[in-house]
Image (tube, rainbow, N blue to C red):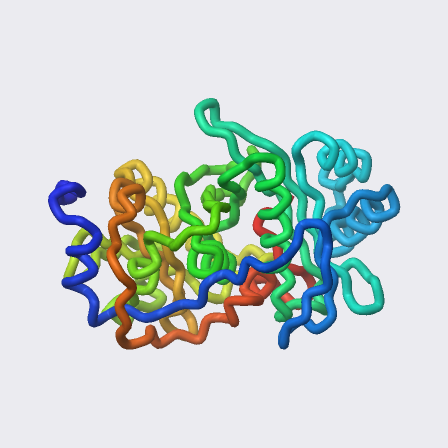
Length: 337
């Protein structure tokens, strides 16, 4: 049984664990939704902005279909749908290379769970040749601006929790929270998903210090998919996973075993009222999710950021983690259909 989450504040928790904190980079929210050149060390002279013309929607559809290589026409992207979304509260945004080619694309639409309204992002896709240049982060920033323009204050999307680099981008770079877990989200096998919620307003991340904790353990293959309570604080539960699984991998028996173990663990943890707030590379082979009680995530009383030793991990550069989770033949996505 977990301790009463109101008995100890996040500030107290961090005070006890401050020797294990490290600092992660924050999101640079400087892009314009209208479309402006972005000049960075990773992505010089790139354009990012909204897509609004039929020819642009055709480009986006071509990029989407080429990257994902879906054989079924039922999974293809319709350019007319993108036009309708842009005119009715949705988003269709892109990033262009210096030569004008569309190299990144994302789209979304207004959504509700019956109680709360939000912008739901269905897909973000990046040309494989442009992985590692921060394109995924640029797409999310432009999409954020569009969603704010429509009056949304949060964005949601889902991702496959087997993809640890995607998890790192969602939780440690964008600072989202994994608020729900769905089994077979799309009604077919191997589509378990974690629902991410991202606050769009400019304000400090109340969970920053908790996200920056690193486990004081050396877990490996035998721990993948299993819940591992923190040695010092049992309100923190870690979930080690295989760090090498990427989109497009052939589903081996070992990957299927990992999926089954992770499904069982996440089902139990979410039934217990927990949420995911971090995903770090622990070793070359192992990444680890951090889960905390939902009440702790909602309280937001984490106090000031404290510095300490950095976690020993070789996770992909935060600016490129959105696309880095995929294989050489495919490109990044926060959702895959």
